[in-house]
Length: 367
Image (cartoon, rainbow, N blue to C red; front, top):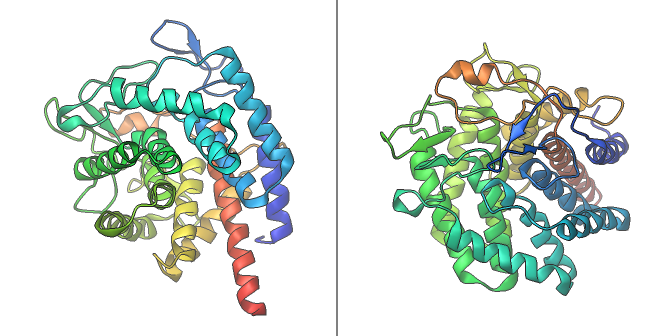
């Protein structure tokens, strides 16, 4: 049921569920130092927490709730107090929420870590041919590889902080990375995006049209344009990519409102985090007039599916775990299910967008 009161209650439960997430020992994710990583607990500095903080900051931006601001600030104070991990693509993700927090509050205490990390990303992230950001992560170097995840984990931060700080070098680098990744990762036959590309052999691995990878694009393109203040021909080009992608997304949406973890493979399971991210991007694009009524209806069907998959503890179920690059399509079908901070965050983005949709509709009807 798409009722505003229910959506706001579920949003608060999603936040509580995200904060309560803890690693239960089911998965052991070694990083480059040989120590276990924690991709599940909210109390860690990695990409799931980074996406989680982005969702929480967006929700705070929408509500202005001081409790959410305190939660966000306490998280960053605690993590920065521990000391930051080594630079890679995924450990850059939490900087996006911090950039938005600094942009909104202007508090000087956040500026130094942002400036430091931005300089590290520009100068020390390994590069592929044509100077793309190599998808180096805590447990893999992935030499010569471009992944669609990189755009959400690194380039949204560079766009956000570049605009907020007046550093045009960061903003322009984020634009170049988006254009380069779009060149190698978009599937010209379908408009969907492949998970990755390697310059070693020059191919798209399994040619997987992976749902969450596509969700990083659907959710990220409009946010990138907004955060970076992107205009002109680049904006038009990226919106064209989004429209082409959306045509395939609408064609492949399941009757339940969800998408399969391999978008065009109905033998793969239905997956909630991708559905939330795709639904968010489609609803936002419809609200902004970039896409039409068919996209809005698809986003609302995705919303229904996500709402049905939030349990009594506020935890989004049927979320696929972190997914490395697959060399065959079966790899994606076999990824296990595990609640995560990024699942919570993508659901938060979707539900907050749905509430905004309702608010705008109500204002129009009363005008």
